Image (tube, rainbow, N blue to C red; front, top):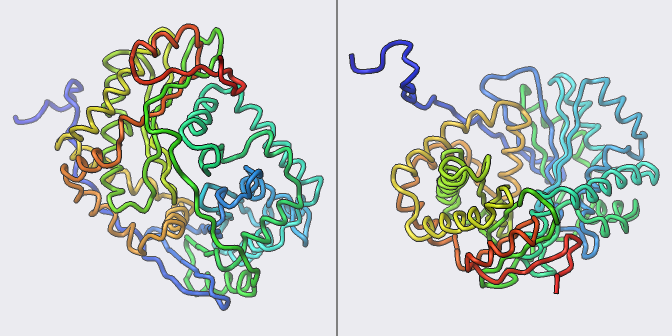
Amino acid sequence: MTGPALGDRSVPPSPGPIRPYEFPDVATTRLANGIPLRTVVPKTPLPLVTAMVVLKAGETASPAGQAGLAFLTSAALEGGTTARSGKELAHALEEIGASFGGATGWDSTTVAVSCLAEHLPLAMGLLAEMVRSPAFEPAEFDRFKAQRLAGARQRLMDPATLAKDAHARFMHRDDDTYARPLVGTEASLEGLSDDDAHAFVASCYGPAVAEVVVAGDVEPSEAAAAAEEAFGSWDAATAPVAEPRVGLRGRERVVHVVDRPGAVQSEIRTGHPGVARSVPDYLAVQVMNLTLGGSFSSRLNLNLRERNGFTYGVRSGFAARRGPGPFSVSTAVETKVTGAATGEILREIESIAADGPTAEEVLSAVSYLAGVFPLRLETTGQLASRIAEMIVHDLPEDYYRSYRDRVRQVAPEEAVQAARRHLRPDELCTVVVGDATAVAPQLEALGAGEVVVHESSGGRRP
């Protein structure tokens, strides 16, 4: 017998071969006004469909001093149109069993409805109403604004969010796009009005920056007819797509401590501006990051969780944006081990930046990425979101059809070069949200850069 006895639970089973998966074809046409329409029909269709409008107008397009406007505007689309109130809109969606979802990132806004395929024409019409003619009735807009303000206040009380926001603020220059939260701040949101939302839509929502995606059990001709009826006459002019301003506040290591007196835990964030989604070696970066801190079996997790027992989990990642999104490592640890945990994080980054991942680590990472790929494409909404990613980042139409093959072709040396090219240990900005009295001496002992203590309100302590 060459393998473990049947039922022997002391020996883990060997992984089986990766099951074949083929990303469905994407049919691309144009509406009368030039808006591209992309239709994708899953190989194993259910009688469901998702219709999505992708607008290259994200939070980057929000004017100076109006942080959070793009995010608030997309949220308030649900509050009614010039043809029907918020309640009437909700009732119309409910009548056809449709769900609505709007999402704003730094680079785009997506607005989508999902329903039974037979209701696509009605759903597409409602989608067009929300995008083309939102009402932003003052009382309704103020309701959505109040929700966002409550969220902004909550961010100031949540240590993890406080650490994330502080890391962006200290890592970037004051006027950089990514120095502020995507959702805005309490101060910026307070000054926003329904007039601002109308102005944002007038400037940033239009056919020149829009594409329509239909994913589900529908004939491309039916999708085209529904999209033409809903969007074919749209002729709004838009401003040029804004490009993010991204830089680095400084090129020397620094540690910022945001004081929370009496805190029993510390939230740790460390990193620097990373790479734009468009970099040629993006897949090699993903493979490299998976070995560093992007999976349960990563170096960081095996070190901080399994070997040292510092944390329940630690993650690293490169944010995918049109500009260089942040590379960051995040975790939470007990106050007494804050310095030790931070030191281990820095050492792991230094190690992989110098030598890269091993061939065995790369093989494991590419197998994982190829294996989980189909699991992230099980719904029409997930399919539509992948197409939206292709649109926003100008990816080729066969990008996901060839994705698994290209992932498996990432060689160990490519992952090594990605680590050396895109990780800069000497420029790490570290933020610790915790009890400054207890953690600052630990961090100073690391010699990992100047340690600067700040009040939780944002002021620097003398």
